[in-house]
Image 1 (tube, rainbow, N blue to C red):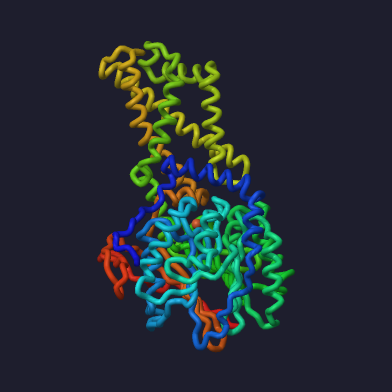
Image 2: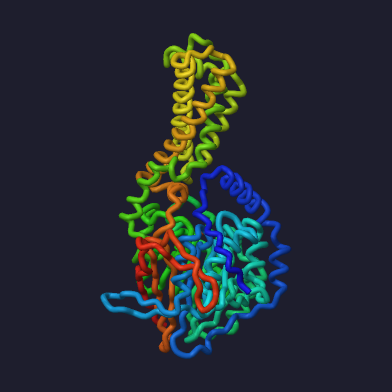
Length: 551
Ligand SMILES: [Fe+2]
């Protein structure tokens, strides 16, 4: 029996909430230190489970399947896409004519199945429940998934529990995989090979052996679709000095050494937008990360021309819309109210340390206060250490792989905050001593000026960060992640619907929702509890791109 309680509808993750920031930093650090090296036990345990390729090749007529990635953030976006995927038939407009698409026999999750970090309950609330409600009273596809970096942060414990236990299933759907990678044999000799690259590490040996066995069962005519966790083809363009392209080399290794042919289509998520790159032979590299997570910008970093002759053919949302959305960073304090705590602390500590040795007379003019603050920074070791830590922190945060840019950008950013902290502290002193006429250095004056510094610091610090992010993305094309995770945009969501027809042509439909519903109503479908949109401003799913790959 399913419960009839209203479902918990999570809002979009607040990435600048200090709690989320600290927990993410901790998990990423742990995953990077241990995840890459010490997860062999789990890999071996998973690899000890027998797993062959999964056959769908006997299917008669058109074969439909869906690919969605980066799901499990806020309810509105995740459920809007899940509900569109689950509709038995969805009509889209292509070149003026209505085309009918059908819900997939198979649903592939392409990575990052939950945000901000994986746990049993987060998978359940943010991912499984929306999909269970969407499929309620409708046909259920078979579900497969590969992990993205967010699934790896707990070394895959919650992911394997959710997707690699066939006896359990997912959202009422059958699951069949027992490992974090898999191969599907599709009709007309198409093969879908979903690869797990563990936080960008190299392929593990059991996985190579698995794909070798699969490759041995292919004939010369087999056509390959690769599902990978990251669009390395975009990242290596964005950071050309960055040289560690394990994933490219891992997929190249699979193409050259294992399957002995090129993949016709690459599917990935990780960047939360839709972009399609195509080469002269009609091979496709598709980034489709619009399953629910906050929107990433399509205008920066630029990715119109890639290596190996791949050119950008489609982007959603379009680059103009994306560039326009970046302006919202001026509303940073309103969009990320909890980030204020971070700056309140930063500014209050800085002002406190700078004013520790301040004499009452110094307060009167700006120059005397400034020279006293600089004096304190040089003379007081604790103050000096504090400032060095802050500058180092901002330099570390700066998004570039060119060292001098990083130092320059980070130092300038830190300097802006320290100047603002000084001004805020000075205003607090003036207000308490000259306007409220409190005794300088007394407990009441110190507490009052501390409170003013905290309040002004929270707003000023958040606003400066917003301006910094706006300038970074608009002028330098950097901080594409930070400058858009700050906006928490739940709209412009999309997924891929794929069809293999009777002659073996693969048609890929990218379907998007410009504005997802904000309001919902609990309801019933065929006696099962579901949730229906109840928002006149929401827009219907529409075709954003369509491409055919012939055998
Ligand atoms: Fe993601």
